[in-house]
Image (cartoon, rainbow over all chains, first blue to last red; front, top):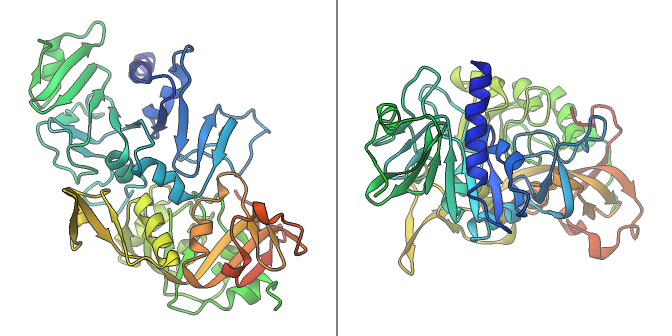
Amino acid sequence: MKNDNRARREYIARRVAQELKDGDVVNLGIGIPTMVANFVPPEITVIFHSENGFVGIGPSPQVGEEDPDIINAGGQPVTILPGGAFFDSTVAFGIIRGGHLDIAVLGALEVDAQGNLANWAIPGRSGPGMGGAMDLVSGAKRVIVATEHTTKDGRPKIVERCSLPLTGGQIVDLIVSDLGVLEVTPAGLLLKELRPGVTIDELQAKTAAEIRDKP
Amino acid sequence: MEKVMTAVDAVNRVKRGSTVMIGGFLGVGAPQQLLAVLAKQMINELTIICCAADYPHNGVGRLISAGLVKRAILSHSGTNLEIEARAAAGEIEVEFIPQGTLAERIRAAGMGLGGILVTAGLGTAIEKGKRTIEVDGNSFLLEKPLKADVALIKAARGDHAGNLVYHGAARNFNPLMATAADLVIAEVAELVPVGEINPDQVMTPAIFVDIIVQTTGIEGGIK
């Protein structure tokens, strides 16, 4: 079960990594999106952006070699690659807002057939807040949602219309889940790919929105 | 004009009920010593403006855990359950602002702009009470400048005049906040004579900084 869970998360991360192109500037959210960095195809170079103030995120440092002033947006120690640069928060978000960020990869509480995303507020709780998510989804050239297909108790996260407070309206381009890949189109969700072993019936049964098959 | 003083003397300039901007991102780049000293004073009813609520005993979390905060304007609180508990109990009023908008509103105040136009938050609950302005057929939210009575910031290196240099991702909100408060108190890890910092390398010019406190190392480091 644990291995299965890991394999499903790895499928998502690996599949998102296939969407990246040589030279792309990419921001990865926390959770599954962070794992995407481990699966970048070796033949391309991608520049990772961190909204707390740098481009050129490198791998995790060796134990004992952490620089306490270099963390990613999730608070974990990271490194900066040769050629990277630090800057203040207005530049970090100017990169996002100004059209200099090619792809943002984020998680979801809910995502819907119109490309609306909800991932920042839970009714009944004051937090956790949106952090940089609203700026990312409104500014990035392409928004990819990387998420498990259902909640822990089996309810669909991909729905006809989000019921939770929105992070952004009509901003999601692609949804990559542990069951497959869906493109958000003006006509709704279009199936791009099924994870090997998954049938379209299973995918549809676990999705609370209509999915059109590839023409 | 001597700007260097002790953390206690500096923090005592903060008045009860003040609006205080605090630099840092999850504690990195937070003025830990100023916050640790402030948390021991009975200067309460503060409104804080910061990127995130950090952790209960790190960064701005020190002020929240000490019960000094009545209002928090920030982008994220998910790392600090203490602020959520206090918000649920009605002790702290929390206002969430998208992080890039928060940074740019602070910059707008410091740079003398009347407001900024952004798309972050369009089509969400953030729109409530705000004007939507169309420019060349595109919609934007009007966001107003955000300033404070006091800014507490942190730099890796500073000179006696107040020129500052930051290190790594500890820069974040610090240089912005240095421009947007009536009183700017900078905590520096290394204090050097005027002239030691190459003017080409200065990240915050001294004219923005009113008070300099050198970190003693006691409660000055990060977690």
